[in-house]
Image 1 (cartoon, rainbow, N blue to C red):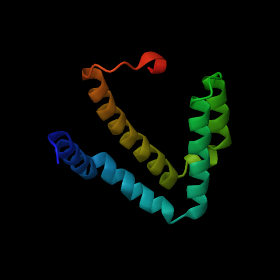
Image 2: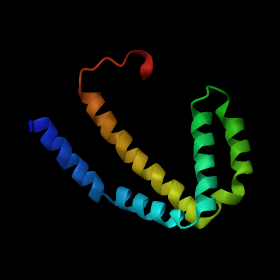
Image 3: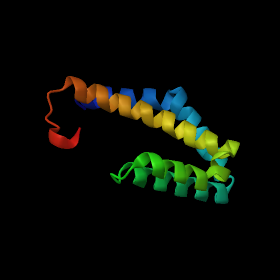
Image 4: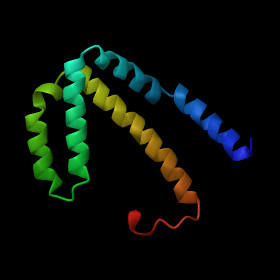
Amino acid sequence: MNRVEEVTNELKDEILKSQEYVRYQDARQEIARYPMLKKKADEFRKRNFDLQNSGTDIYSEADSLRQEYMFITQNAVVWEYLDAESAFCRVLQQVNWMLLQDLDFDLGDRQ
């Protein structure tokens, strides 16, 4: 195994032990106990993702989406799941950003 693979495995192990990952896994296990809540939360996540990547006026559409799913996002189990997932995603984004920021890699128009 080369050094990059070794360090990558160390990073993965640290991420697996991180507070954000542990919290996300706990929240994921908890919401799995409520299949209908999980289904609605996943619908919200998908619609929110699609909205953010649609290129439309995100602000008015986001308000509409929040109103439509208000009943589900006010549920403590769902909120913890969504919030924990978001926190964990920020960790992954930060790792990716730190790597790309310091490497000479042409991203072109993808930034």
